[in-house]
Structures are given as C-alpha cells and as structure tokens.
Image (tube, rainbow, N blue to C red; front, side):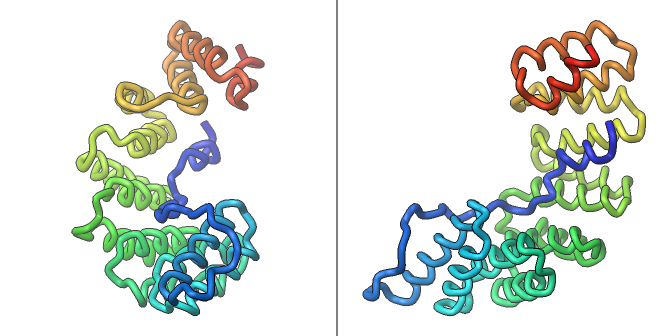
Length: 253
C-alpha cells in the first residue's frame, strides 16, 4: 500500500461539527434575543459548511460571532470554513479566537491541533493535542490520541505515532481507527504479521468496508497466503462491487 492510501484512511479531519445542525432556514425572527439568534446563525452556518456552501457559511458564522463574541464553536467552524476557502490567514485568526474564548475546551484544542498539523506546525499541534487528550471532560481521548498519532505519521515520527496509537488502544482496546492506523503503520514497516494481527483485532469488533477488505487482501498477499487473499477479494467483490477497491482487485484477480 502506498503512503497516499495510508493517509486516505487517516482520521486527521478533526472533530466533526458536534452541534446538531438545525433544518431551520431564513433570517432569525426579530423577537429572538441575541443568544437565540446567535445559535440559529451558527446552526445555519454549520449546515451551509456541511453542504459546502462556504461563502454562505462564512456569512452566517460571522453573524453568530457578532451576536455572541464568546461562541467558541462558531469561531472553530469559521476556521474550517476559511480553510475550505483557502484563506490560511483568516483561518488561523478564527482558530486563535476560539482558543482565546475557550482555552480549556478539548474540542477546540483538538480542532486547532489538526489545523496546525495541516500547516506542518508539528510542535504546535503536539502541544494542543496533549492538552485536549488530558482534559478531564474529554470522554473521547482515544480519538484525540489517534489524531495526534496520524499527525506524527505525517511529520514523520513513526515511533511517536505508534506510541500514541497504543495509548488510544489503552483507553479503548476496540477503537477501530487506532487499530487501522497501527495496522497501516506496521504494513508500511513491512511487518506484515503484526499488521495482520491488528487488522484481525479490528475485524473482530468493527464493521468492515471496501478499504479494510482491500487492506486485508494486500496483507495476505504479502504473506504469500493466496487462499486467504482470494477469500478477501471474493468478499470485497461480493459486498462492495461498485467500490474503487473492487475495480482495482477485479482487474488483478
């Protein structure tokens, strides 16, 4: 598997928008107080962001911030929006404002760390990942640790990455993304037996996918287990016949 395929499975996307996105449309009613209007603008902005209508998202999120300058989630989503608009300067400003108004919020710290990693500021990313992972309110520290590990892969610092993936598994031994990431790491290091062991742990407690079955077939192929490889290929072609992985394996047999 190429490095690009490894990165494709990475979780380095930060936290998804954690608020429930409202289906309400239109302008906030004039009788709504500033807090309600700010929340509605945020919900609309988040929805526009998810729909990739980034200019509309920006306008709504800026409106939310104008009404409630301490709304950290609006700054964070505005940062994501400016990233999508390829405006690094304003994205940085939005994330830094989010940190200022919510310096102890682990979701804000995690999202900022992801942004810093994308900018290849690995020292800064590490600092905020560590803060987020250690936050007492972070009930999903395994996700933060896995994000940090993916960032270390990109540095690259593979030893640090493996340590972080293992810490994530200490928190939740069945956490699928950490299992996949350490499997991919072992595959990259050509330690195929270890890669297989972690992938089997993944398959025992997580749903499969075309990408996972493709990876399983690749591992068995590297180990010279043609029968097991063929079984994974057959399963992939049967369960995910329209996937890019199926097209690739269908041509190779």
